[in-house]
Length: 211
Image 1 (cartoon, helix red, strand yellow):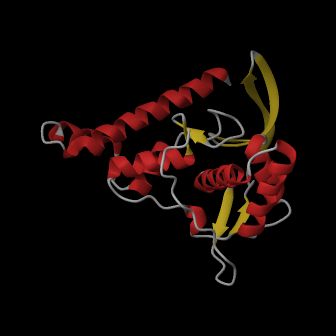
Image 2 (cartoon, rainbow, N blue to C red):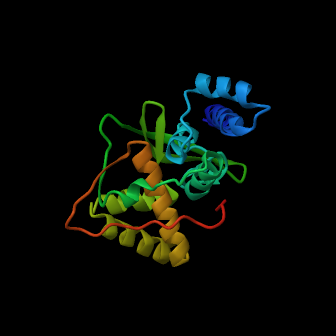
């Protein structure tokens, strides 16, 4: 687990470097070289494509229980993608309001978490190269999805349980849950769709990069 986790983080940083150089292909002195790198990486320079590219290593390993990649939370990663691509990133959870947990072909296993010099076994689901640790914010989301599939109800359920059980601030809990659901949708752990008769969650992009 330790070795694979670091390998994934290294791949993340290599992907970030690919995108960084391709984004800076606008500078004339680097344009030819950066264009070549971009073509090799298969990059399309818009914020949503950038977010998907930077996140392809997964959000689960870096800090089990919280959606992070490249040392950034999901909201921070979207801001980075926006700044590099020069276009606005969108949130998938603002386009849907009906969420179903997708564990098809997933296997329940143990996941090694390294905390304070200790190795803690955590319950997780694995499917291919993706891992869903059932801990932290993810555990609240998984539990909420077992009770509801309506987006607003799931968000309210998660936020209330984080306030009650973890002592989390309400606004921070709402952002953490939204980021986790966005990551789970991106990785295929949540199947989403839009139901016209139900309200949608409007995501407001943070003004600064959350870490």
